[in-house]
Amino acid sequence: MARAPKDEPQPSFEDLYTALEEKARRLEAGNLPLEESLKLYEEGAALVDRLRDVLESAELRVRKLQGRLDEDRMDLREVEAEYGEVED
Image 1 (tube, rainbow, N blue to C red):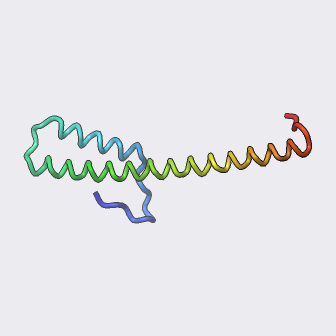
Image 2 (image 1 turned 90 degrees about the vertical axis):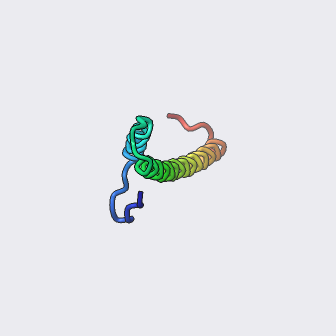
Image 3 (image 1 turned 90 degrees about the horizontal axis):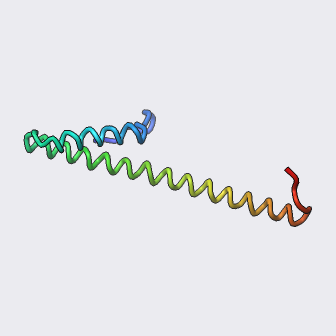
């Protein structure tokens, strides 16, 4: 499966996963010619690669957000230490 150009909307994780499930379902049925089975397997492997990329990107985003949150907490602690407890 070829990747879409950057200016085209990328399929969501859910869409990619659904496509992978459909290919797996067809393969598990076991009633396909060998060439079609191989093609579905290759397409499924490409989908797995894309899903892995999406998950890795999401993990990186979460780590960046966690880092920012940790920095904000440290800044707040410094302010609290300097000026006393901050009331809610």
